[in-house]
Image 1 (spheres, rainbow, N blue to C red):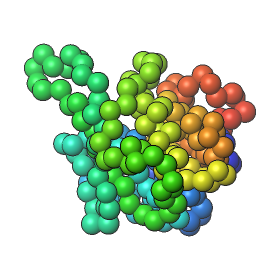
Image 2 (tube, rainbow, N blue to C red):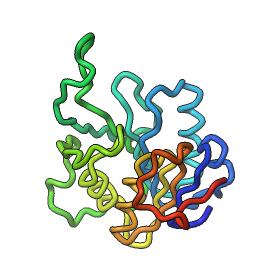
Image 3 (spheres, rainbow, N blue to C red):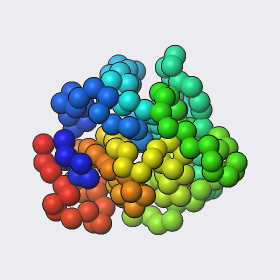
Image 4 (tube, helix red, strand yellow):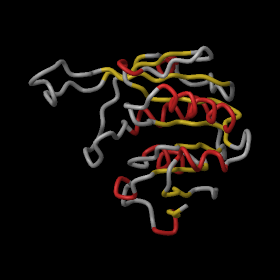
Length: 191
C-alpha cells in the first residue's frame, strides 16, 4: 500500500496484504457491532502489522478486550439528546491501548490523562472523533515521519491529522462516500 493514500476497500481483505511490522502505529475506530471472531482477527492483524502502538476506539457495551491490553482510556463525549427517547445515551467511549513504541514524555502532564473531554468541531461525519483528541494521541505515541495506519478511515480525521503533524499515513475505508472532501482523487485508490 502506498503512503499518504486512502485505499477504498475492505480491511478484512487488505490487512492480509500488508507486511509484518510495517507501520509505527495503528489508530482506528472500527465498527462497534463487530462479532468476537472479527475483533480477534483484527487484533491479530494489528499486532502483526504494527511495530508500535495500537489504539482502538470501542463502545463500553462491546469492548475490545484482549489479554495484552495495557491501558484503558476514556473519551467523555458531549452530552446530546440523540437516541434518548427509548434508552440511555452513551456519553463515554473507550480506547484500548497496547503494543510498544514511542512515548513522548516531554509534553505537559495534562496530555497524559486517561480521560479526555475533547469536543467534535463539526458534524460532517456521524462518527468523527475530535481532531484535538486524535492530535494528542498521535503526538504522544509517534515521531515525525512515522507511519500511521487507520484501517477504518471513515471521515479521514486520523489521516488528515497525521499529515498535518508531519507523519505518513495509510488509510483503508470500504465506503468512498464517508471520506472527507479534503482528500484529492490522487490520494485515493481502489483496491
